[in-house]
Length: 64
Image (cartoon, rainbow, N blue to C red):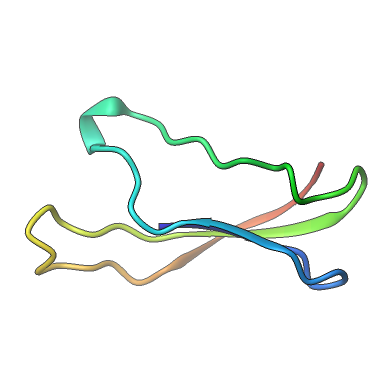
């Protein structure tokens, strides 16, 4: 799962089920965010069989 959230304006963008690990990357759309907006990001992982889920990790703050 990928999550990007703006605490000031409230929009959020997320992907609940991303690409397979072997792809090596995932892309999250930034359409809902305005230029210069403060955005906080999180990531978490889940196994293919849905039996193991990592704790979410705060990735950091970015600006668009």
